[in-house]
Length: 161
Image 1: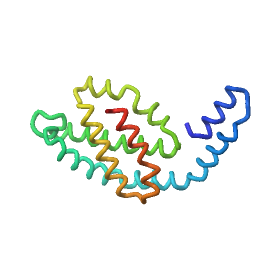
Image 2: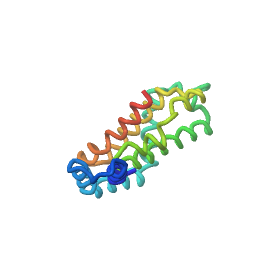
Image 3: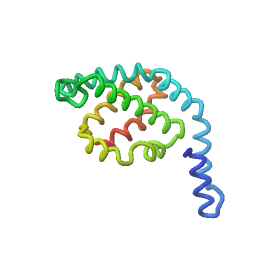
Image 4: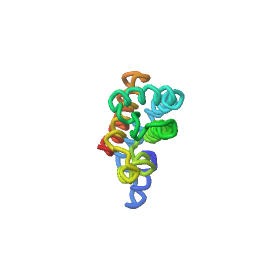
């Protein structure tokens, strides 16, 4: 949900008009719309580049993952990892577009630790992968855009840590 939707639903639930602070939140959301679209577009257009760079960095941090017996050993397992990395880039772009972390929470974070644990995937490695995705992504953005995008990556990293 966007900031606008949240404000309206909350005000309606409480049978009131939006407060001045809530209206200011909407104003800020609308003013940053172009920036959020630009960031999401950059992430979408460069997803494969981001994933490639981030995975190369991750394998340097955790070479055991791609060694025999590692979670990303073999073409199929590595492809599944890369698919997940692309999914996280997309998930983070949803949050950026919405101007809120709720889409990240509702679409992708609830139950992620349990899922990876049940599959035998090291959750700390997934947090490291998102750190690598963050670095690769923010390098493609202006400083101002990186400042806006960074908290969304950090939210996912924190949820996995």
